[in-house]
Amino acid sequence: MRNCFIKDIKSMFSNYDKKEHLHLETVYFINGIDKHDAEIQRMTDQVVQFAVEQTSWGQRRPMQWVPLELQISNMRMKNINIITKADLLNVNQLNNDLALEGRQLNDFLLVQHSLGKLMFYNLPGLDNFIIIHPPALVNILRSFVTDEKFFPDEPNLKTILLKMTTTGKISKTELLKLWEQHQFQQYMQDESIKEFVVQLLMHLDILVIPKASKQTNVYLVPCMIKSTRPSHFNSTENQEGNTICLRYTIARHSIPTSLAYKIIGASICAWPLKYEDNKPCLYHKAALVNVSQDIELRIWIEDNHVMVVMTNELALIHISPDVAASVQECLTKNLESSLLFHYNSFGKQMKPTKASELYTMEVGIPCGQDVCYTSLQDVIMQDKWICEKEKNHDTRYLRYWTFNKSQTTCGPECKGLNNNEIRTEPSDKHLVRLGNQIGIKLFDDFFINLKMDRKKWESIEYTYAGHSPEGIMSMALVKWKECKLENMDDPTLNDLSEALAAVKLDTHAICQVFRENTKLQDIADFKLLETPGDDVLEELSKQIGNCALQLGIELGVSFHKLQSSFIKFPKDLPGLLEDILKIWKTESKVPTYHSLMMALTRVDGGGVGYLRKLFI
Image (cartoon, rainbow, N blue to C red; front, side, top):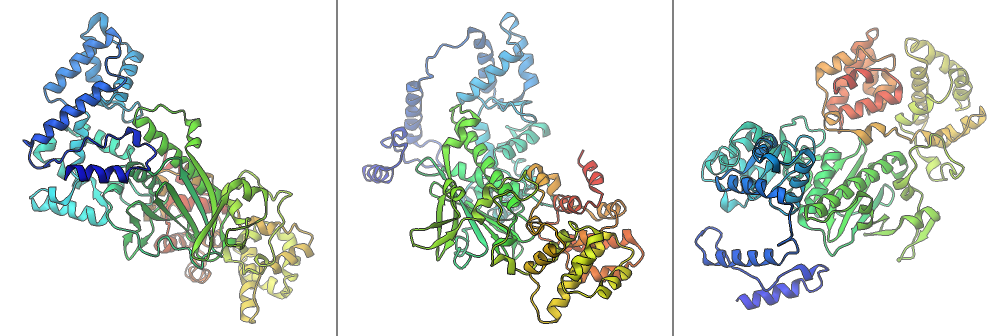
């Protein structure tokens, strides 16, 4: 049986690009629940033999390291597994003339880490502890990263693990409960060590706090997610009009499982998971996240590819180029940091600038049941390309992945909206943003060029006199849209463009309504992506200026619900704003501090300073 197994394994890895590093003849059949299994000793002997053959075996070490190495070895023999750096400093001082100084000690720890003799991360929050016996971390992981056959018999603990394998979630309280078992207490004798281990597992993306989570003490465990993605998850059929794609190809035969988990973990740290039927859309090596109220992102690992699909619920024209570029930059940064972490964890020191050589990136668009991909260079150089199916694909929206977010106006290369786009019905958000670009003095002429009556404009001015000029203009444009629809006529972006031209305003103002300020998105952290409490919204409503309509529209609250709020609070601006904010919090897919601050910044409404103070 052993020979047949070895033969099958060799065949399986025959095309693997790193097969020279595999020792496929050294196969052991071990009974994992029998500690006296003779195969264990044979495997141990073989591991020692491999260690002796390593280039680092027998290398000369600084004589000054020897005393500290012996002291650490003695601690291991006493079953001490994790120590503080302060304890190591005290032990080091006992060596008198051979004691290592600050930088020497750090170099010693980093070299020992690279050799696998201990674990030390020279990072804030992790550099106060040292795992002097690395197998200890493996044993700690067995408390929750394990197979069902090894679950504890105690009913409450078994329930915790069964729930985690179903939902992918575990709370900090549940984790600490698991660690109260005798076999794990020997590794973590006090609360400070437990907190360090939690932080380390988060750094390794074994535990992940999902973005927009209302509970920062509940973690996702990507490596324990058993759910397979739905059959339609990868499908892009009939989505050519609202979807763009991105594909990263790693320069190796396949993506290791540990790296795949880290890539997915980093993604769900960047955007909030979408929920369907009250369940998070997190699957084995795949995730579905909400980028904004109307944009979702599918990410999955396939062979040596990281596949990314961005879909707007309406159409491609509603995808902001700033958002697409920001998503690409975030994904690329996460991928590079994951690759660097993976390579450095295996003793391969790599400069961050070299990370981009480890993968290639292509962009794509749905084509029938498949996706057609092409290089970024081709997309930048040409407006269209013919795919293998001899179909003509527009590259305009694919260029969004690399859009220059720093430009504040349309460049000379911008040709404005095409014939199909110009016939699109503007959303309420588009109308509010356009109104903010038109001065109040020119607006009445602009409004009349939309084929509206001057009396209608005067009536709107009178009715909403208590609102800001921007609010009145926004209200007028929304009323224009309603009038067109009531008359069985389609309001279009072309109507707005022609009216702009008639009053000699730049028609590229239409392009600007699709822009987003992604500065906050680029620096967003866990706190920014929490949901604000009602007490925060109540206080915030007192800090915001007279921009209730614009803010509500930017937050995605429907115009009809805004009108109801106006009726309930005709002369109470803080009450009106608080009501709007609570509607947003209840109905939004992404009711986060980040979304709220983005909207406030867009309408110049104030209150951002108050929210920032909450995080300083």
